[in-house]
Amino acid sequence: MQFYDTILSPLYYVVSAILVCFHGMFSQVFNPNSGWAWGLSIVLLVLVVRAAMIPIFTKQIKSMRTMQALQPKMKVIQEKYKNDRQRQSEEMMKLYREAGTNPASSCLPMLIQIPIGGALYGVLRLISEGHKVGIFTQAQVNSAKAADIFGAPISGTFYSTTHTSVRIVAGIFIALMCVTQFMTTRQIMTKNVDLTVKTPYMQQQKMMMYFLPLIYVFTGPAMPIGVLIYMFSTNIWTLGQQLVIIRNNPTPGSVAWKERQARLKAAGKLNADGTEIKGLASLVKGGSDKPVEDEVPEPAPVRQQPKRQTKSQRSSGGGGQQGGGTKTAASSRGRATAGGGGGGNRNQGGGQSPKKKS
Image 1 (tube, rainbow, N blue to C red):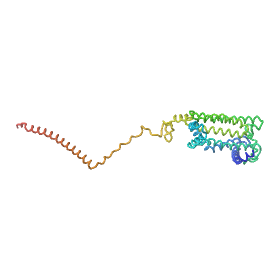
Image 2 (tube, rainbow, N blue to C red):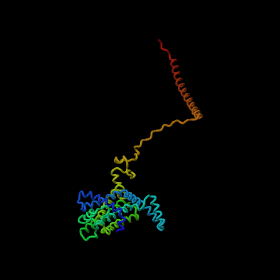
Image 3 (tube, one colour):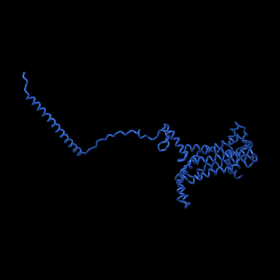
Image 4 (cartoon, one colour):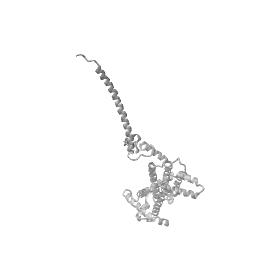
């Protein structure tokens, strides 16, 4: 254990500083030596750690979604190069680079939480042995060692005691850890996975849904109750955070995605092509950012300027016009002549009529 403590010694100072800070705050409300003051300090430790990990967790969710989207292509590569492991691995890495993802990034939050949980375990273990650790004073060590929750000291473990109350409290927290871990994995499998694509990844997730809770069954009894509180609080945070992300940013084709599409459609925030309406149009039910075809005004007619003509074209056109003019003039003269002749005959007829006698 000495080698273990040496490696995690820097984290002991970080964890102990956070616990002492929160314990001083809760001591204003609860008895400083009570398990509530120390237990709630551990819960707030979880909140600090997980809040700092939100950007990493967001990256993990994006990586998991990308990996789920790549499953059909991965399956094709596995079938194509099933007899050439090296080529299969090369093609897989090429696919990851093109998609801008890495399978290890989905495990990053867990890798960060392991040393934090290990540091808390080391701090509580040293406290249970009465040793000063981090920035703890001897008085604070004695206070934390004597603190209990529901009759069980937070530094006690299921294996290290024969007291029934300690084992019952430890057993309850272990059961809660198993249930919350199962619910977290099941939430992904039933809500945020495209069930139309059957891939080995889904089978692995299904196995993990039953395998991860079993880990707590074997490792939980060796953990101090304070660590069990930390792990249970972490699972609750993960479950709630995952619920929010799946509701607002689900995997396309999943059950959560279909439920979100139905909510957007009912709220009038869904375009005809299935995309979400964004911008000011989303404030109006049934609105759309795209212009409606019936409301698009018709373009105004464009006035065409006459084309410039060459001299020969103008001469040819002019002749035509003169000819047309001559024809028109002749026609007019013909009509005038016809009209004039008629008038002359009438005048002549009138001139030949006998005069009235006076």
